[in-house]
Length: 444
Image 1 (cartoon, rainbow, N blue to C red):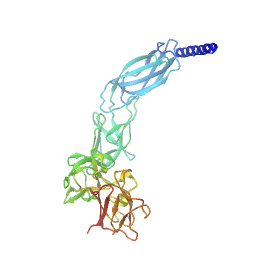
Image 2: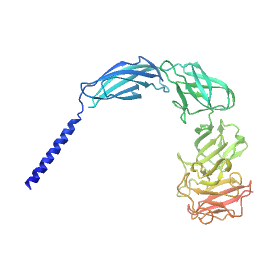
Image 3: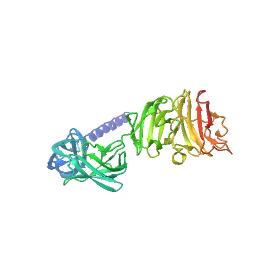
Image 4: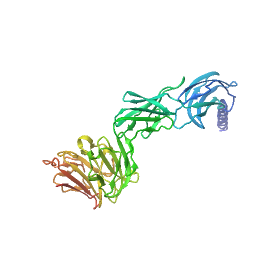
C-alpha cells in the first residue's frame, strides 16, 4: 500500500512540473519591437490609395503582425494587417475612404508592430487630407452616360431631355495620381458612396430639366415629394411610397405630388371619391397607406402602433386574406396567391365586422377561388371550418372533404359569380372569433 501511495505522489509531482514547464514555454511581455516609417505620403486626397513602407525588428524575439490603421479624428476608417515572420521592410496600400460631410483636415496613420509575446510598439504619423475637386461627374442611366459639370465647389449638374423617372447612379472619376473612381448610389433610403444601386430621381413632368448632386453633402435633386395630408411618404421600393397615419371615418385624404389620380383604381373598402376628393371609408384607427405608382392604386392596411394589426382575442384588430383567385386591383395583375407578403387586409367597419369588396372576373375569379381568412399578415392563426360558417348559396367553406382544405373558400359546383358584378364579403366576429359568420352579397 505504501508503494502505491508513493508512486501516486511522484506521478502528481511530475504532472505539476510538466504543467509549470508548459506555462514557461510561451512567455508574454518580452522583447522590445521597433518600427521605423521608411516612406509614407506627405498628403493625400479622399479616395486615394496611399502607399507606405516600414521597417520592423526586435531584440531576438520573433515578430507576429504589423497593423496599419487610418483614423479620422479617433475613428478607424481603414486598416490592414500584415504577418511579419521576419525582421525587415514591409509595404502596402491603404484606401482613404470618401465620406459624406467630412471636411479637409489631418488624419492619423497608426502603425503597430506586435511580437509573439504580445509586446507592442506604435508609431504615429499625420496625413493631411483634401477633398478632390472633380472636374466633372458621370450620371450613368441604363448604360448611357451624362456628364455632370462642376457649377461650384462640390456642386455638379446636368440638363437633358429626361423622363419623369430617371434611375441611375453617379460616378466620380479617379482624381490625382493615386485616386480611385467613387460611385454614389441608393441604399434604400438615401444616397451613399461605394454602391451602384440606382438613385430614383423623379420630376413632375418629363422634358428638359437639371439633375444635380453635391459631393460634400450628398444632396441631390430632383425628387418629387409625395405627401399625404402634409406629411412625407417614404419610399419603400421603386415607385412604391408609404406612410403610417391615424385616420378617421369620412376624413379627407389630400395627396401631393401624385399625378393623374383620376385614373387610379380606388379600393372602395377603404377609400371613396366625392368629386375630386378622397374620403376614408373604414373605421377610425391607424393605417398604413401605400401608393403603388406603377399599378396606380393605394394599398391600405390596419395598424397596431408601428406594426401591422392582427386579430385580437376580443374580435377587434384585423383579418387578412391569403390564397388564390383574388387580388387588387385585379387578379390578372396582382393575385395574392400563397405569398403572405401580398396578403389583403379586410376593412374594419365596426361592430367586429370586416369587409372586402370584389368584382367578379376582375378582382376575384368568377368560377374558381381557393383562399382563406387569417388572423395576421402571414402564417399563424387562421379560420378553419370549425371557426367560420356561411349560408351563401354560391361560396362555400371547405372542410377537407368537399374539394377545399378546412376553412378555404370555394365556388359551389355548377355555379359561378356573375361576371362584372360587385360582391361584398363580410366576416362578422360579434359572436366570437371561433363563431365567425361569412355573408356574401351581390350589390344591386
